Image 1 (cartoon, rainbow, N blue to C red):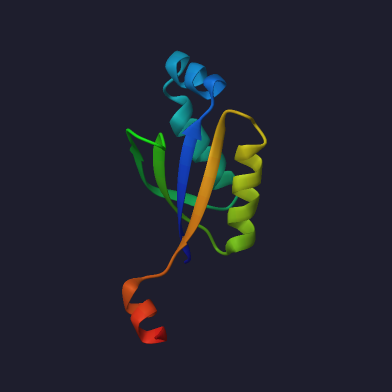
Image 2 (cartoon, helix red, strand yellow; image 1 turned 180 degrees about the horizontal axis):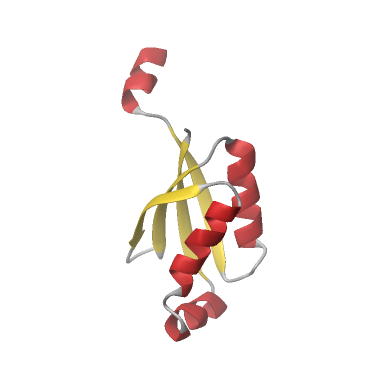
Length: 93
């Protein structure tokens, strides 16, 4: 299944939401599953982004739907990267 890296930066509204309800992070992960993708790893980070998520989805269209749905809420900004396993990358060269 294709793997994606989703980088998340909370808006002030998102920071307030997480501060008042930290479990919201896990609720969003369940919502991502309802959209057809799965968060397989997740880290809170310091720096430019607040969270790094590894997400598996059947295809780019599903991942686009996840990004659009989450982004439309106004609580975070997202940057999604497609991941290519190194062995696949080397074989393609």
